[in-house]
Image 1: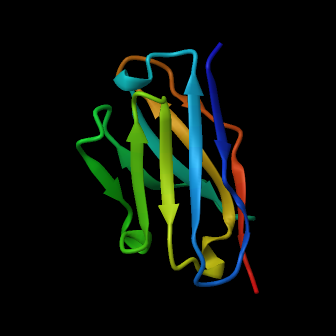
Image 2 (image 1 turned 30 degrees about the vertical axis):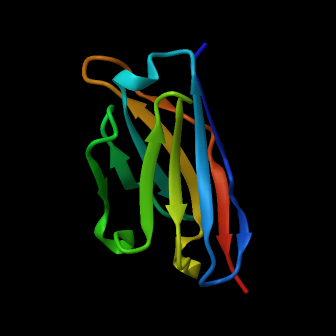
Length: 117
């Protein structure tokens, strides 16, 4: 069955870094665009970054553009989110999503990122 499993979250001090990973299985990973979303307490889920199926095109939303990088490894069915210079406002549950035109989206269960001193 389809699985997206995020990992790499945790507690980090402001200014620190984390690398989130999302392991995909059960579908043709290389045919799907991949996205990272986040949801802070009391807020709606928001898009953070996206990457094309080949990995040749990436986009990161403006608030984190200079600090976050999305990448993927189609040979390993993995997508990553490198987060640098973390701030308390980056605290959220981070989710990965797989999307393909004409097909249903798939979501992972999320990984908690807490930025606090």
